Structure formats: C-alpha cells, structure tokens
Amino acid sequence: APPKGEKEGQRPTQPVYQIQNRGMGTAAPAAMDPVVGQAKLLPPERMKHSIKLVDDQMNWCDSAIEYLLDQTDVLVVGVLGLQGTGKSMVMSLLSANTPEEDQRTYVFRAQSAEMKERGGNQTSGIDFFITQERIVFLDTQVPAPPAFAPPCHILH
Image (cartoon, rainbow, N blue to C red; front, side, top):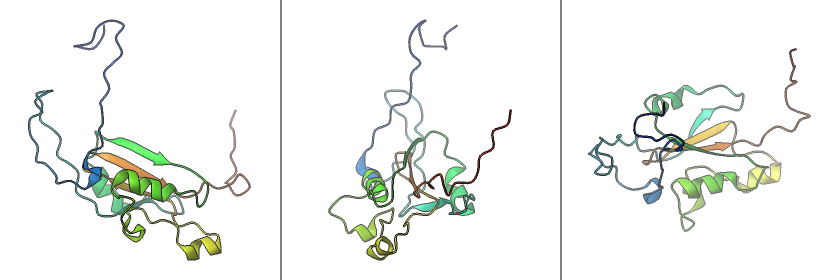
C-alpha cells in the first residue's frame, strides 16, 4: 500500500529546498509553517567560515562533529574537479559570498598565487560549510590520480 497521503502510482513527495539570503540572513526562530502546519526546524549554528570535515590523511575531524550531530534534514552539495579550476570559489559563491567581496574573506579559501606557483593544493581533505537553510557544502581536495591512489583489491 502507498504511504499515507499518496495515491497508487504517484511519485513519493521529496523535500524542496530553496536557497534564500545566501546563508547570510538572520536566523528565524522555530515557528509554524502555514503551508505544512508543522513546526519548522531551527536553523543550524551560524558558521562564518568553512571547517575541516576530513583531513588530508582522510581521517574524520572531531571539530566538525558538533555541527553534524543534530543535522538530519539537509541538502548536501559537493564538488570535484582538477586543481585550480575554481572549486572553492564556486562553493563560496553558492554558499555565502558574492563576487563583489574580497576573495580572502570567502568561506572556502581559494588557491593562493604562492600555492599555484608551487603546484600545490589549497584544499586538503574535505572542508564543509552549513547555511542557515540547512544546505551542507563540501569542498574537496583534488582527487589523487590513479598512479598515486592506494591499490584496490577485488575479493571474489
């Protein structure tokens, strides 16, 4: 039998997320949603910059746990790409910053000129930022090329 409130053959309803105020608006206290008639979730703690979720050795970082424990109704947006292609900049612009702002104040640090000259990565591991609209943005380091990736073993 289909879940309560849904008809046979009808697609299940999915949550709809809207990005509003680009993460910089004031947090509204929990209130009744007039459309749904249910209490809204409280917004997450306001973040001013990204936080390390996974370090460069692929270990979970304890500092991130406090932001994730109570976060269950979220939309996650991640980015993968080659070095220097603008992953951190795109994630900053999607999450909280505007193009007019100084890039040094972006929530995800873009690759510095010095880092470009050395051929290194600005982002190591995975950094994250949570907006007041409960959207989690993940900025990742450049994936390792196959020659540097750890060996995979397929078990039969």
